[in-house]
Length: 304
Image 1 (cartoon, one colour):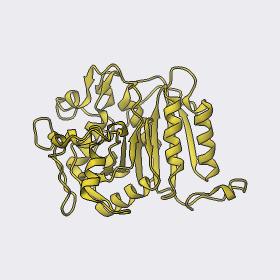
Image 2 (tube, one colour; image 1 turned 45 degrees about the vertical axis):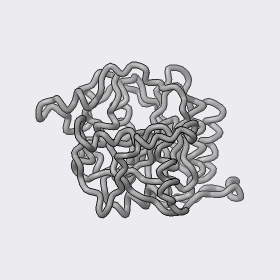
Image 3 (cartoon, one colour; image 1 turned 180 degrees about the horizontal axis):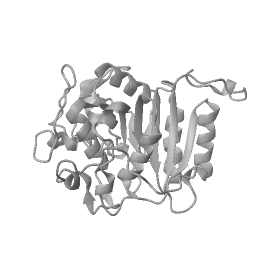
Image 4 (tube, rainbow, N blue to C red; image 1 turned 90 degrees about the vertical axis):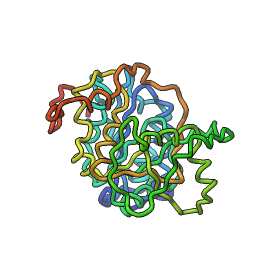
């Protein structure tokens, strides 16, 4: 169906086309940032997508803020299916992501953080890359545009484009693959894209240590690799759950970053101030058989 322009907003909605991507947005105490994130989604034309917003704010749900509510209405007027979910109590980032993953039924699902804006065409570029590369995930590392004048060539020396099919990789601390992580600092990818002289419509896959903020998965690959079902092993105050899930997908199916990155980090202060446990440090030390093999039972009112 594509996007419904403003000329059709007042017309009755027709039955939508099959959804190609489920966009999964976990949020907490960030109404202004959520509004900007939703505005970025409203700028996407193709592919057909559905949005799930799952809120764990301590007060009123973030989507009730006038700016966020307006962007929800824009997406709905465009013909998008927007699901607003209240998911409490809070059991940590990994549990929240697993909850969102369990809502998704599309072949592709994208985890989009609530402080990331997407330029027009970014979602279609990611969809095209995932379908052509046939790996487990592709992503755009969000750029901090306040750093456009801060060039860091020493942090981009590990850049390596994929030459040929994306292959499975094992990433762990101390490996050369892990040392790629500085690539995504500041505005490094914006500088790399300029140096590579990428043309409009052109994109380039490259090797990553992991991707934060904007990652499109083949949903079946993420589920087969375990998703975020490791969450019961973690203290609720943890970080690195996205890193661990991506490493598990990379080992089976491979993963790639995409240049240019059309994702922009809003550079708001983090809401995850207590990071007493790193997910991969905890889970990778578990003996074989310790990880849950099916979604764990939860006791919460999802507020749908």
